[in-house]
Structure formats: C-alpha cells, structure tokens
Image 1 (cartoon, one colour):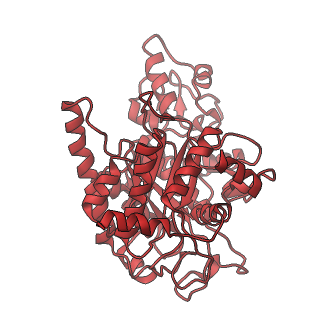
Image 2: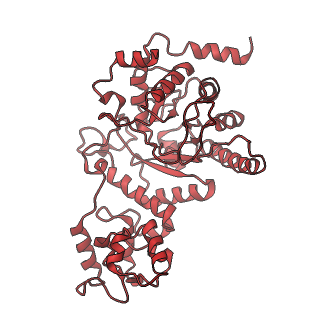
Image 3: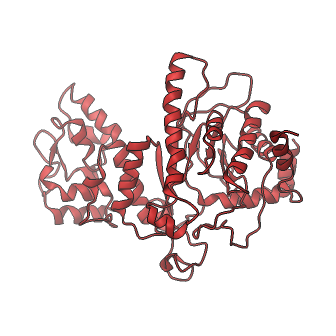
Length: 458
C-alpha cells in the first residue's frame, strides 16, 4: 500500500459517527472568526465541460436568512488543532465538540449547494489535524476532487497552514483561486505571548513562496496560453486587533510593509472577540467587563487601509509616534485634512488627480470624473454633486473658479471639525452595535436537518 492510498483511507475515517448536518453546524460556526474572505477578484470563465464560473465581483461570504443568494460556503475542514493559541476557540486545551469533514463531504456540500444557487464558491480554512502537512494533504485531496472529479470551476479560497511543505502549497495553488496565510498578530512579540507554537518566520515563508510562484506563473502564462494559473486572485492575510497592545500606527505600518514586500491583495483586520479566559488576554473585551470587540477601531483601520491601497497615502502621513491612534470621532481622511489645512482649499479646476484624491468627500471615481470633465470646460459645485462628490464633507476643502460654495465657510480647524461632527459619519451596522456576528446558514428557520438530507441526497 503506497502513501497516497494510506492517506485516502485515513481521510475516509475522519469524523465517522456524526451526521453531516451536525458537522456543518459546528464547522461553519467555527469559521466565523476568520474574516479574510471577500469577492474573488478574478474573472475566469468555465470551459463548458464543468459547472460554475468565477467572476471578479458579486461574491460575498454570508448566508442570508431572508432568502437572498448565498455565495460562499465558509467552513473549517476540521476544528481539531494541535496548537494552543490563547485567543482561539479551537485551541487544543479548550473543551469543545470536535469534528472533521472528509474530502468527499466537502465536495458534496459544495456541489449540492451550488446546484441550488445557495453558493457561488467555497472558502475553506482549517485547524491543524496531526500536522500541517497531514491537514494540507487532506485539503489538497478535497480541492483535487472538486476540480477534477466533480469538475467544479467556481471560486475557491483556501487557507495555507504555516509549516506545510513548499511543494504541497504549490500543488494547492494551482487548484485554488485565492490563498491566504494568517499573520494572526501584528508583531513577533505578540505571537510569542499568545501563540507560542507559531513564529513570524514560519508565517512569512509561505507568503513569500506564493508571491514568487505567482510571479513565475505570470511569465509562464504569458508564454503559453494554456498554462495553468497559480492563485490567480492573489493572496491575503488577517490580523487580530485588540488582543495585544500594538497601536494603530504599528498595525498600519505592518500592513503597508506586507503590501509592499509581498504584493498582498488584502490585509484583513479582525476585532478581537473574547472566547477564552486567560491572564494574557485583555480583560476589557471579556464577557461581563462592559466592553466588546473593538469594532470602531477595526473600522478605522479598514478606512486607512483603503487610503493606502487606492488613495496613494502612506502610513506615516496618517499617523506617527506622537499621534499613534486614529481619531475615534473622524474618519482618517477627514482627520488628515484637518491636520493639514495649509494644503487647502483645493481648486477643482486646477488640482492634480493625486491632490483631488486627498479631499474629503472625493472618491477615486469622482476624482477621475472631475479630471475628464474639466477638459470640456470649468467644473461647478452643481457638477460635483452629479459626479458623486459628497459635498457635505468636500465643501470645506474645495473651491470652484476661486470661490467657496458658501461665503461663510472658514478654513479653520475648530470650525471645520465642529461642522463635520454635526454632519455625522454613517457607520456600518457592525460598528453601531446592531449586529457584529456573521449570519449563519441556520438563521433560516426553514433550513433543517431534513432539508440538508434532501440536498445531499440530490
């Protein structure tokens, strides 16, 4: 009996004795703490011989309870884990119900949910069963069956486990659309404190491998049209925010460095949710302490991350050692503008594209529209509104033909701050407290074990 046959036999024995419905309930719930899944970012049409397409837009990761289309089946392969990370609900020392899917079960769920338009793709993460290589071999077997036995050509996002052999990651990279390696915590010191089994070196090694393999594959695809694509949607990572004492300036610098050195598509920020009690974990976010996940801080980091990726800001411009944390009351772009009033007001009809991007209320699309429109003539304030500029913010920082929109507007820090606070910022529901939990497939009261049995049975 060869090694592959032994692995297949071992895979068939995983999770024996538990109904697939119970497994799905446990392993989809366990996956909710992993936030680093998003739209695919890649266009890849099916070749007509299988099922599914992969589109760059329109893929989300929530199961809606009101009947809306569910796009990503977001699960763990297993919640077994040999590591004892202090912040993780699946850590080895926790007394939680454990289970694992088999490769065939993941394939069956993905295909049957896809056929019924519940999902458009798969997000597959995992705990560590026995070892990184053992677990990733099972994930490889799963993806291989999905692609070659079930001919699934939809979107697949898979998590790579640090410590896995490079060749195994390469093989998986040709089956997945996006791959991510969780950074977990912002600094090596924090990893030593809360995740002593993990090291920054082990985490960054597969990131570098994926980056290099993507670059090599690009050259190969350019030469050979039919060459297979390696992780065509790129790679991403995730950092937990609030479990350790790093300030926003440190976190943003880490993110900027990852974008520059590893070519990541996204850095995700996950507000720390207290699921364990431990002396090394922050008390203020624990149950009964009157606090909760630092969702507003997470939101500010996402806004700043957007400025880094699309608005041509640098981390040192937004924060510094004297001001290491974001303003709770103002979004990072407004806060930056107020601290740099010497650069305003900006004349709409003369300013360069990069400067327009720095004006609060002006987005990437509206800045492009302004540049195009002024080739045909002078732009006025009424034109800006039609172009999508948010004038309730921009009015303090712009002039049209040398004039402010209102004569009473003053370029004064206190005056502008007060008015921006009066206008108010629309925060997402996750920050305002309406809900921060991930919607589950089981929020649909009509979705029962019998329903799942019927789906799996076809």
